[in-house]
Image (cartoon, rainbow, N blue to C red; front, top):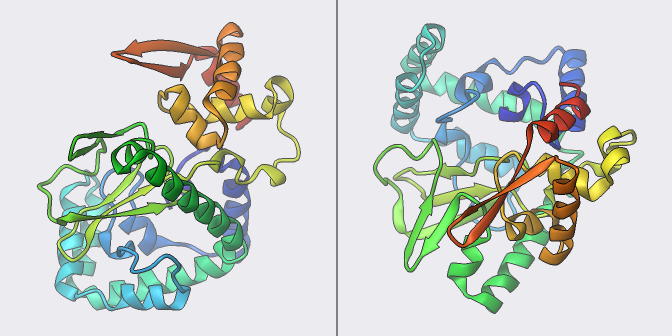
Length: 301
């Protein structure tokens, strides 16, 4: 829903265009999901219960949402209402708060229809990406230790001793989830922001973009002017630099070695499409106005 709300996207552009067309052809509107997932900020926790295992089953996951305690649904709706400036959204949320059971029915019906229309066919590809990332993270934790491997998850997540700091607009209230457990969820649609489930009924859960996400829909991108101009890997690097990243951060996302990524960044820097800035011991790369223009042009912006 967050991706659908955007006018363009760094690497979901193909999926985004096809999904909008499919929704229009099916005359499917997602009014309840749109209400529960605003373009920015807090989204309804009821839609994202913490995983209980590595692989979920679609029908079982929908049933978990349907079984959300009604008092938690009402609290979720009030949180959403307090964080929106839209009077229309507040009125719609207040109406559902009067009948939270109806909201659960409507939300799960829309989720089911959307799954059938646009996610079921892509799920093996999405699952394979997640499985590969889980295997990689497990190996990194074994080789480097948990703290260093966690630091590689996202540029906005930092580990200092036994303290984990995650910079996100959604984590703006006191910690409600159990601080002794952390669940990590690789999710292809979270970029560029990690998503945090901070709820008393669940362990603290962080969804992050898995490595290699820049190539997720690559086979569907038959005509990519940016890739033809800069080369496929450098085009992916430019798209991924929605937020500043170090060479190691970018290497994680591209599933390449840091020296290989460093060479690509040097070429992009010489072309004036990225620039580097030092913060302490780390060097961050970001798109220049020229790089921003090339990415926007490639996405039809």
